[in-house]
Length: 486
Figure: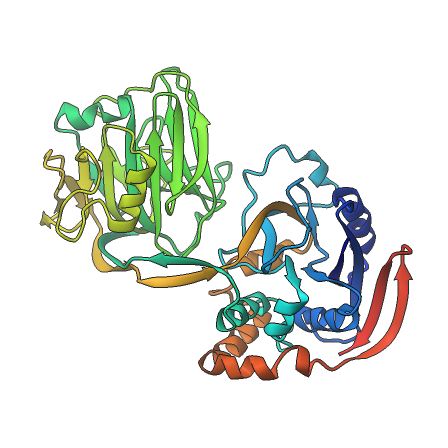
């Protein structure tokens, strides 16, 4: 039977709840586990990397593999699998902040997500061979941020298996919306576009926003969303919510809404959104991934001569104006439901390829790429002559996707409740832009390492971990608390 050591930073507020809950959730029939809590005796912020190195050094002769775990993260789904893995693996598919005890009321995991795509912290499995090969964690990160990014980089330079994602470069023209007056109005001039949202249809666009709408709907329904593209009245289309979610909504003939939502989007980053409406369901894609789906069991509401708006819900209404603050590009509308292959093609290559050919099976009903126009007019490049009228827009052009190869950790499908400080989680979600003092310091440390990273890894890690044991005691018989000076 394999032996697993779970190493965690000590926290007296969580240790009892974590230990008891872990025992209930984790099936020990295929492996034996022990929890080892490292208690840092220091006035400085916690140094998780160093504590993990200490725990590994003390236990490596007794155990086969290791889980480096945050004590404020508890498993809440049956897919939280702690069994032995042949390669370094994150157990976290998604997490969600909540109070301890609230996890017992979870019905689904739709709102669980990762703080960021490269997240490699919280709960990771590694065997002895791989952990020693990367020289463990860095000892240099105190407090929030970057110890997991550093660990991921250590795996890259040591050729340890990771998921590789290669993206093609893409340059697009787009419009900047100021959040107060900017908009594009498209008045239907023919039945092709007038009736397109009556039945199966698809809408697609690229967007980039730097912050989220400032208010919830109960506080100010004119500023609770950034409306991206759609039709007013019973607003249908795509928008960004106050919580930072991509939202798609359609209404049926009885004026009942059908909503699909993503998890939190990445801010200050170009994202691709597609809403596909089929005869019996609605699908929402974010960056070529199906993120939400809901059943549709009634005919759709008919909007007749209602305008289409880009960048605003309805500028002339007394409520639900919802001007967008950010950038929007390559807005497209089809009178049929795109399939998965077509969604992938427009994500990889655009609605038109480098030769100007449309990449979908059928031509779009409307296509506003902001690349062609006259005075305040944006031409409809579908050929259907439904041109848009600009109001207070700035047009730009840049590369929205670079040719990059990104390395991401392997993941299992576990969902976890975050029972720690919600403010810390908020800072980590935006770690690249955060002004948090600890994250800023750790960002600087990491960036200084990059140009000489392989040499740094050889000197900073397991082989440079210095500590002194102050106290070592059993906890609940099989577990252990180790207090150390670092």
